[in-house]
Amino acid sequence: MNGELVIDVEGMSKSFGPHKVVNNFGIQVPKGCIYGFLGPNGSGKTTTIRLLCGLLTPDAGSGTCLGYDVIHETDLIKRQVGYMTQRFSLYDDLSIEENLTFVGRMYGMADRAAKVTDTLERLGLVARRKQLAGTLSGGWKQRLALASCIMHAPKLLLLDEPTAGVDPQARRDFWDQIHILADQGLTILVSTHYMDEAERCHQIAYIAYGELLVHGPVGEIVAGSGIATWSVEGKDQISLASELRHLTGVDRVTAFGRSLHVSGIDAAALETAIAPYQIRPGLTWTRGETSLEDVFIHLMSQATDNIQ
Image (cartoon, rainbow, N blue to C red):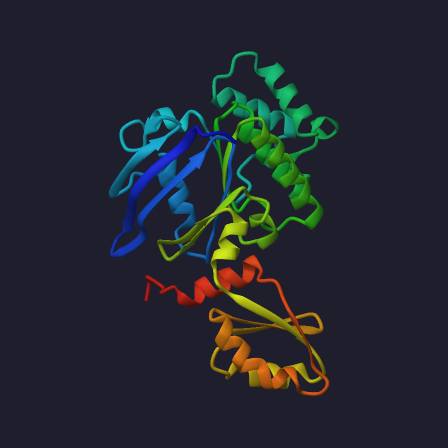
């Protein structure tokens, strides 16, 4: 990454009917950054991403994407964007190679055959080039979709929950490819529900019901959350969890394997609350590490649904 900003917007808002889906959103994204967008379903992640790159017109706000005005120069932005939707949108009855050839025709690419061959090699699709897309597994469909998005050499890549429904190995392989693309200077906006994927982003933004709650590098977000966490092991954890949840200073109790993670936003109040339990026979307490999931669950508990 460098200091060049690919996206620089402020005050972005968008409503559909009476519902404000995005409210006063602003963000800066440097070139080569993998920027993750997280939040509950219906929180405005997809709408926000589309606003940032000119695919939707905001009701208010201003800024630039790829050096172009997001209000008045959207056609220039779209030509340099690759967009991978949640649902596989290529043709099942065409082969991998035929699908990419079709995409090349849509973009009016010169030397189309050479670019298709280069893309097949780049994404490891050469051996399956003649296979019908409809017979591919979820992971291979995902790889084909990514290939179709980058064949025209975009400067900005939008990925809308790209790994939903694929196995862990396919997700890992996909993210390895994403990091290679970012290292080559491609800027990537990705929405995801997976915490392990969020942790692989250079920066993340958490959006809940149209509001940007927090953004920045993962480590800074976790460190700045102020959440304290303890881990406790012992018998009859169901009863123990029920007791702990009713204590002042305890905000959340979550089961993790054979232990409970007990967390609170006020570290002193949390320690006071659990002190009697730390001397209870049969329980082993250790100070735990606050996870990204802990932070987002806390943020979600503070957010208000804008469609009620």
